Length: 323
Image (cartoon, rainbow, N blue to C red; front, side, top):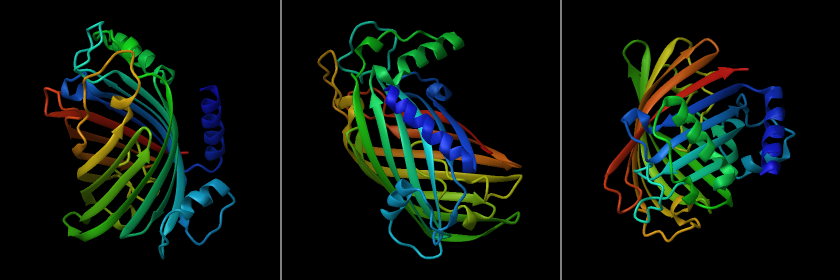
């Protein structure tokens, strides 16, 4: 764990030497009055200013990761880093005993690097992540502190959380523009499709979906939105200042494994996760000089068969700034 933290700190130190955009993102289900399933997520990330894909760089790891993307003409390339923490809880957090028929407590901490190719009609991104699920992720302490600060019920079942295991994840996403046209107020609207897949011992899944955007200079920011958790492309450098962007996304997919259910537990769980995934997001961003703020509502279908709720949701608040 200490080795992972040292690695994270050293990479972010290198990144900020030529940094372009930093961002902080908070996700929480309190927006919908819930306190169960996917409960909270926090992300701190960075993405470099995009440059021509013809320009050579000296970062061997980044060059290798970008070489895994399919070749494109007339593109910009970039890379970025992020550290994130996520937590999942049963629907009832006031019980001190194990809940074999509800999802287990699970906390996850990960460090991730991505590479991207952007153009006006096609965008590609891939991710490589190293993480840990279990008590070493520190999510029990985080949730306890947040609930104490808000005066909410203290979670009582973290002693039954998924046990420690290191994780390795790969991800890939490609966006294709289907249609873009002019709209009122000197704006544009567009519809695109995407394919997002992940492979690893934390989660493996395949997904397809559609994205709708309405705003200014959309061709300059195509592909910056992503269905990958916590990914934020460098929109500050390309978005029109003092402008609004409205967006929505719809996705369907199939999940093959999920360590938040499949991980080792100190009790016998009767829960089976639901492999069929459906999710949606609707939100808006405001871009100002040197930064942006984004708010969105997110919805997803139940992740395990015995869940008594068919749908869940959470809110997202995100800040980006130039450095």
